[in-house]
Each structure stands twice: as C-alpha cells, then as structure tokens.
Image 1: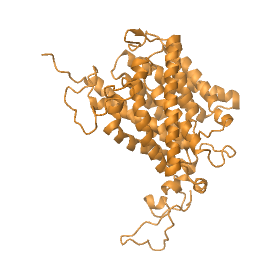
Image 2: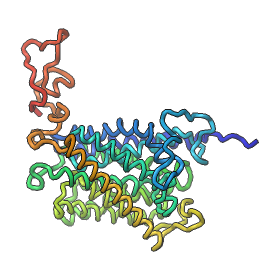
Image 3: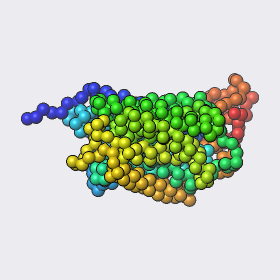
Image 4: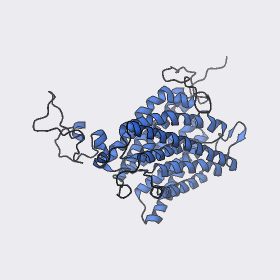
Length: 454
C-alpha cells in the first residue's frame, strides 16, 4: 500500500502566513480609500471594505469555494456539492493537490482574494451608494461573477485550462474583474453632487500612505503566496513584486512632476498600487528586469489613465478603473510581450509552450476581454435592478449632509467638547441612556441622522 499523503509543515506555515497578510490588505484598502475620500464619507467608505470581510467570508465557506475550485462541470463553475461548507473534510489525506497543504488552508487563502476583490469595487462609488444597496450588490456580484470567474481562470475552467491564459495571482480574476464592475457601478449610480465642479480632494494623506503601505506589505502574500509552496517560483514572484512596485512609484511621480510641476505623496501611494496591480498576473512569468519595466510603464500609464474620467464623464471616485482595470490589462498583456520559460515551472500546459509571443499575447488579450465583458454586463444589470427596486443611489440631500451620518449615524471626527456621552451614542449625537432608559440629566437627545459637529 502506498504511504498516505502527509502534511508539509513548511508549505502549510507559509500559506497560513500569506493568508493572514492578504486579509490585512482589506483593512489597508479601507485606510487607502478612506484617506482618499472626503471626511464626511470616510466611515462609509471603510464600512464597505469591512462588510466585505464579513459577507464574503460566509458566502465563500458555504458555496463560493466549491463553485470556484470544485471539479470542473462545464468550463464555468465547479461541482456545487463537492466542497459545500457544511461538509467535513479535515482528514489527514484531505490535502490540496501535491502541495502537502490541508484543504482548509487553501480554502482560507483563496477566501482572502474573494474578499478584497469585492472591496476594490467600492472605491468607484464613494459618497453616494446606500449601504443596503452595496450589500445586495456585493452578494450578487460575488455569486454571479467572482466565484465563476475564479473557476474559469484558476479552478480548471475554460479560460485557464482550455484557452491557456496565464494569471498567476489575479490580474484578470481580481483587478480587471473588479475594475470592469466598478465602471458599471459608476455609470448606474451617476456622478456625485457637484462633480467635477467642486474640488473633492483626499481628506487625510497620511492615511492614504499608511493604507498603501499595508497593501504593499500584504501583496507579498498575494503574489508569492499564490505559488502555494516555498520554492524558486515563490522567490521570483516575491522579488518581482518589490521591484515592479518600486519602479511604478517612480513612473507615477515622474508623470506628476512633468504634468503638475510637483510630485505628491498621494501620487506615490497610487503609483505603488498601480505597480502591485500590474505585476500580479505576471510576477512568476517574467524576469526581474522586465518587472522593473512593467512597473515604470504601469505607473506612468495609470497616472495618465485616471484623467479619462474627466474626458469621458464617468465619476469613478477613487480611480478604480484607472488603476485596477488599466493596470490589470497592462500586466495581463505583459506576459505575452515578456513571458519567459526560465523563471517558472508553470509555462506549459498539456504539452504546449506558454511563454511570451504573439500567440500568447492574443490569448492574454482574449482572456482579459472575456472577463471584462462578463463582469461589466452582470454588474451593470445587478446595479440597475437594485436601483429600480430597493434603491441604490443615496438621496441628494443626504449626500450633501454626509453619507456617514445618513447611513451610519456616526462621524469620523467628533469635534464636540469633552465630557459628552460616549461610544456610538455620542458619534450619532444621541444622549447615552441611563439605567432606567431615560436621558441623563441636562441632556437632550438629538434625532438620529441630525448633523453633528465634525
């Protein structure tokens, strides 16, 4: 009898660490988006990321993982009953492939990808989306788009296994996917009140930089962790992630310098994200010098691409389209231009060579186009349906007063005098209840939703 499979403790430890730091990317995204937002909408912006951590985790457990990584059924989704969340599969032999990693660990790692992909979309519609509408959209889009697309690209579906498209860590499945949905959402919800006439500058630049730093840190788990094992491919993915991101920071701020006369910290932070996005699909398929060139190109092109919204008239609040959609396309195509068989063991499938070249470039472009169309069409239909039924766009008056108060009855920056009521009551402008349920002596509760100081 052959020996039963055993757990590889090194690979398992690496993937557990990678999973944890990929999860940290979503709070990092919340800080990045929150700092870029206006002060009266920062909490709502961050809530959309944190709610994704809650909602998508549960969906992934019960059916998302099996749809994405179950045995292929039709090229579009996996066996819906294979890994259903209510099943138990923690036997010693329940490992993921030949990695020696317990199935639950791989499931948790991929869960973090699903969470942040949904959260990325939210930056396109800051300050104007009802929170209830966002939750409905996140539920529908994850179910109808992300889970099947993850299967198509990574789980044995037709884009990866049949078409032969390469996406090491999420250029198509994550960034192009989220960017296309962000564009659809921005079109359905329309422009913010006063955009583009009014200046809508980032309210907290240090918060932006902190969020970008956490994203940069977590991206090593995102990219290098996607090898699943600790080997030479992990090493090249890790190195390429760093050098491409550093080059993208330079590419973005050079464009800023030439265009505006001054480089900015917001620009450097955005450039880092552009580089991280672009290297994601290509990190294990290109040499380090090509990763540096990719970063420079992505940083410069994405810095220019964010201006498209002013020319074309769509209000992508925090430039999800300009950074994630455009950066994802650049990285996806880069494999066709500069892919090489010398840096990865994943360059052949079914006996065919999948390095760079015109054929692979065409395959990469087709895969990106397929994901773009699927995500945009379904996201647009979902958003339109939500808007016409329960409502998705916030009322103009509530938007003007501030979405944080209107949707969450709290404010990020409470400037009221010290000594008032504490906790959520104070943030909402409501007097804290006494033990008997009444109001504290000398205090009058303000109506929920009334604008408060700060």
